[in-house]
Image 1 (cartoon, rainbow, N blue to C red):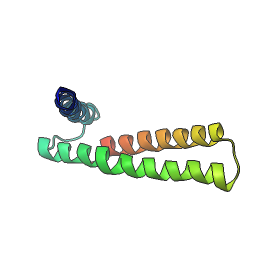
Image 2 (image 1 turned 90 degrees about the vertical axis):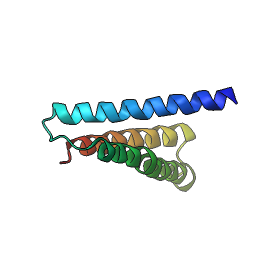
Image 3 (image 1 turned 135 degrees about the vertical axis):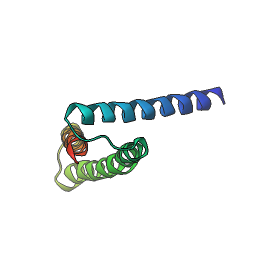
Length: 99
């Protein structure tokens, strides 16, 4: 029970830190201030929709490379993680720079 409550509290703190970091990055790049609720919605959408979609696509890519093309598991996992990391960073940069 305490483990669940601790994880919930850490997750809430992490989300608030993400929103504050996102607002700071937008301010640093000279974008106009938006409402905190709108920024929180954008961060939540990125955290729970975009990253899950990227993870599912990359897992499918790993399976395709391993079973479809016969690549070794280490290569398919490495390529899938690299594609997911690059795609996730690119989407976050686009999110920060959108007006």
